[in-house]
Length: 285
Image 1 (tube, rainbow, N blue to C red):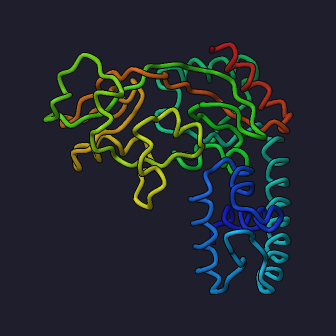
Image 2 (cartoon, rainbow, N blue to C red):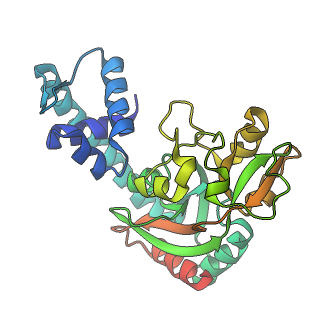
């Protein structure tokens, strides 16, 4: 069972409104609702009564939400103890989206170790849908993510800016273009990619269509192969042409807002090692 879905259900029990509950987790109401429906199917019971005007807990929902709160308290307690052990060893779990900081990673680690040589990292892979929630929920201590605006509970340090590109099949009429605009490609078939935040949808423009579909891609590394296989097009960052080269696709510069890469940490995390990472990222920027 997905712990995140339990958190969503508890929030919905507090708000009794899908829009407000989804906003607290910085996702759109549609995928939020799908998580609730999937949880109800897994539990084999209806937790919430929905009408056009209101949301209420069912009697079974009241019982299960109380149990979910107890379970989540236990999970958070375990996470807190793990954080204290991690703090003692200066070991941080680093979540990385795609190519992360690209060629600047060595510069960041050098700056971190210049501040404190004892800091070490373990690795976790982030995806387009969970890149912020993984940090907020304590699954990782530090996240290298795409920044599109503030997220409640997180602190972002800007690290890198790069142009965005559109990934097109090599046989596409766009493959030899020097540069494209959104108008050039707005009517093209887009590869659905998962998006974690409403601001990412705004940034993505026409590429946001299908971002909440069940088959939406979650991993940046998979995009070039998916473009080559399906013949659809997708957004990426300029560094993708170096980190994910593919003989059957082309990476064409696309007008519009650039890709902002940032290092995300929890606003409440005041550990020495986290302060060192923030300071090193500011130095890098």
